[in-house]
Image (tube, rainbow, N blue to C red; front, top):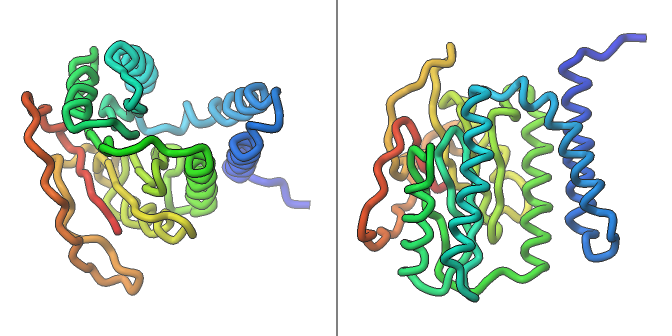
Length: 256
């Protein structure tokens, strides 16, 4: 009998963790012990993830601290219409969720931008009503589906890509090559139920060196036939009172 490789064992372990998270999210209202299941699955997968993540150990710790501090700052300014989540990767903070006004969106962005160790922000908060439980459960399901699909793809560094879903929009964050970014994007937008994919990638070369880039919409994405097709233009956002500084090397790309 052939002994499975450590990589194969690890991928199976992460897929099991993703499955546990999906079950926990969809059945949260039925079981009081769900937090224990989620914590156990996340801890089991996290041991290997820490070692294989392309971020430095310092960046990983900073990202955890940024998310905690940002959540505290959001709570300080929150009102009944503010539902904002902050996700950090390599010290770049992604803001998602809903608020009641454009002013609240800009306030949320500003308090996160000035948090310690934040290089820059990508503010994807939507002005509108909060998502209901059904949509949030579906977002969690889509996240686990995308994660599992990335793990199944041997040519994608799944441990260097963070997946978050909000309102059917999948956000991909990570340190990847341009080829890996295109491949991960194709996988994510191929999942049934995904309405749009937004890439918040920091590009690296094949040998791991950072590549130059800037914050802004990508002009092209790979088509299903291998060709490159133009993206529709993004609607311009109102200028904030104090515009966040560009994040070196980070490229934000909406993919419809």
